[in-house]
Length: 304
Image (cartoon, rainbow, N blue to C red; front, top):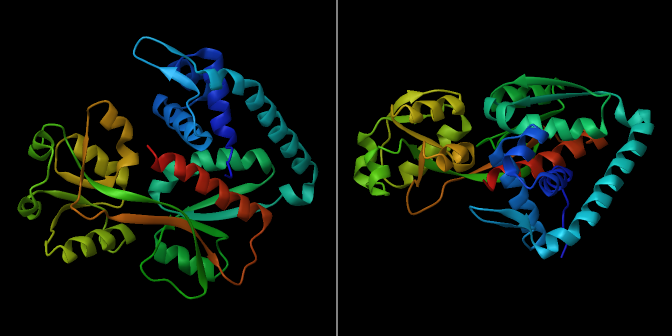
């Protein structure tokens, strides 16, 4: 079985081994406690074993976790050595990367991706253009962007390639006092009657949601449309209506009891994310690494 070792997950594990405390490790790594927990769970899933025994009273090594520490430190040192060699080849590490993306990726996905990317290409200049899918595709075809990191467009030019990095499921997101949250289920016939807070009409996610409910013979009429998923989350936290978002985006709020996620129906609604680029453009080493890091980071986020 092939095991993919992520350097950020190793750093989280080593920090936890040193502090034996989620909160202290999060402060040390400039992460959220939830982010530390998700990285640890992803690493344990990849390795197929628990590294720490966790309970309400204590946090300590498992037998495997104690023995793995020396190996983890050695692997991380080897990764640093490889990066050092890459940095020595200036023709590989100096350049620029023009990226198009949406607001959700700008806020949640790009920061950890670029942090990892800059370790291998510290001399690169990164330029980010926040845009819609249609705008990104036009700029890719005009060579104004190198890559776009977005949800998969319903339709796009045959000259554009889509390299999937992952997918997420969309859920109803409601305040804990909302009737659906209290009953822990959604009344199908009630869906058209509630104030729905949805992504902006014309976007990829809105089209997916509309198609999903049309197939279910349910007509939806948004109360609020906004091209900002963070704002949708905030409106739901204020109990202003029912949002539709991926669960990973509200994982911390769910853990803290501020929001509740409920399935849209019997069928799941999956949304695919990926890197878009012009087919006539050969991907560089930097492009390829950026997509691979994006895939690793997205997997960690989506497993929340």
